[in-house]
Image (tube, rainbow, N blue to C red):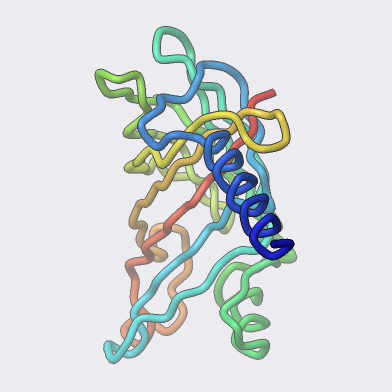
Length: 196
């Protein structure tokens, strides 16, 4: 009997928790948001010798969003260059060196939006902006997919998005080992933001 009660309580807790989880169909409320670093990831993919694709990530990201389909929207993301992580310490040290990111001289990668485009539902689907990397600033476009929005279990309100773009590292002055390491870098962002 105790086991049945225990399972019933667990099931009730699960159902009520799921009931408070965001609906993927919900459009995020307009307002100011802070990126949640613990639930946000910045990933990259690059060709290695033409044989495979190497993936890595940056472990330290922060930023903010202003969502307003009828007004001024903005996106700002700051990534700590030295937080690069490819699960290989020697390679990561090399990627932080002047051959690549030169993390000591350029400690932050920054994206600042110049235009946010929304669909008919009021969801952001494209973000045009300036990417500053390795001391060079160039315009890039992020293709955005809304993931979900709604109240979280702790009384807050969150919105989540996937975004991606492709840049050429040579455009940012990183030309080391061209031909061996791909020039095209795909960047994928998984962003979870908390309404302020």
